[in-house]
Image 1: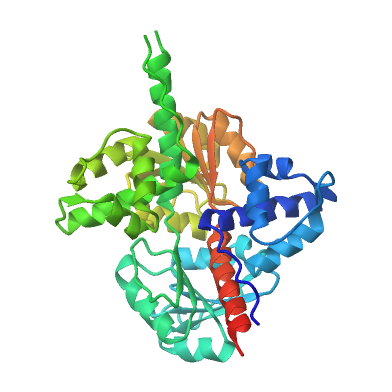
Image 2: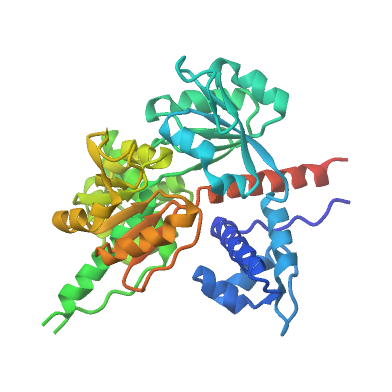
Length: 220
Length: 220
């Protein structure tokens, strides 16, 4: 008999797992051994109830009145998120953004290693950035299959993004992170996320606008 | 008498406003005049009820049985998010990531214009990237005050991020987007968001892990 299927947690809960994990890793570096849901929540900006509910989707962690063991909970979250292992990742597009992603400390620290990179610019092909050889994009499929790479990052311009997505899918890539500022289409079998760097700025200006409105309405 | 205070919508609702706006702008480009909450929701991956609830925080839009007027709703969302106007923005750190941000089409299209950029590397100071002169970081305060800049983007390494944050706050910057892969502290008077580029990759691997588990448990 198959295992009872686990109910799918909502997407924001998955994002919060990443935030909880970051906080747990900081606590661990500071030598903290146990932590309460209240303190995890206040560190990431949500309620203790939310923390308990989110973790509840994935199992029974911690003990009432004692709290969560920092190291065990961090290890569990890494298993849930898949970052207990190393994910070799393929990058397409080695302009400024692609070069920055090749050097980004935040990936390496999380178990994501850009192990091959591709461009179609003859000036870039053959160069080495952060120990990664830039290959001709025509070699994408063979290089990715050879290394069993399942993750792809797109750092090309908006106009070529869909072509690159289609190429990645043909090569067997299962998860794609798209930095090109355009919407792309994938079949249901592929996990796609887009990183729209302007969204965070909009959240900031939203708060500045509200604050401005509050100051105006409270002035005499 | 002051206006009745507007209840603060939850943060995820604000993020969804950005997604709604992106979809509305695509519809407008396609010549669509009105749209239902169901169709907006299905485009951004949430329910019609969620769309109506999110928009309800900000006013009364659209008419029952008719839907939302695409252009008017887009204009309203831009006003709410503050992107109906241009936000001159200061960038600190012009390495690969900073250079990529200077060229990022997704900012310019949204009304964010990086109008001055700073570094402490003499090799970079004085260069011009995308029509922006790279200045000595020592000139930050005067350059920012002169231009009335309220937004700052941090694209330096993890170790210098807090120093740059402190400098920005002293210069009167009110909103900060931090790309350095480290946590920084700001007073309550400053709006801070961090862009952790690894979080989206973790969401992808989370789904790949779940899929792998589902395939294993359903195999004979």
